[in-house]
Length: 236
Image 1 (cartoon, rainbow, N blue to C red):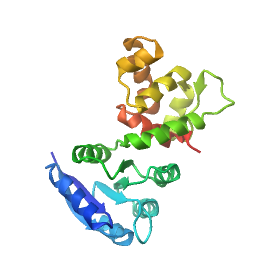
Image 2 (cartoon, rainbow, N blue to C red; image 1 turned 90 degrees about the vertical axis):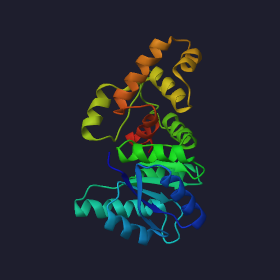
Image 3 (cartoon, rainbow, N blue to C red; image 1 turned 30 degrees about the vertical axis):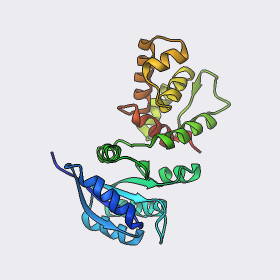
């Protein structure tokens, strides 16, 4: 199995050294470049074409959101396969989180993440699956609830601004109110048994709702549900 090639863009030496050490503990991850600022980071990414770029949100010359925007524009112009971007930060500020995803970030984690969780986040991000820190998932959930169209029928919540194919699927099969209840508890980290107990339904019914949510959001596991809910257009 080929290694996941990673570039790390982080200006704080201690954090960079720590992340480097965590990544090196996992044999399937190869650190192919590092940078202490956004300009250097963009250059290293262009030169090495990594699978994943781990980018600090608070770089000295431009922030991680701006770096992501520039990277996406440069790669689109060059017609190359886009490097996945994993934003790393100490902030769980709502505006920062939404701006990062709007810029094209694929995943978002906090700097106090463990080595095993970071490895998981990098692997899933490299595979094209968004990864979102549980602390950030609560922000996504809040936005899902806040931005649900008040004019829509009480039984459904419409999801907009997906790809054309996904939009067609979602408009045909909107998220129901009960599925949104289940999604809420999934993001909150509840198991199927806990969801069943909270909603007074059977575990089998919960599994059916989870399967429907996964299909409607076009994702393959529970971790990705919050990410897709954010990037699907529920957030204005």
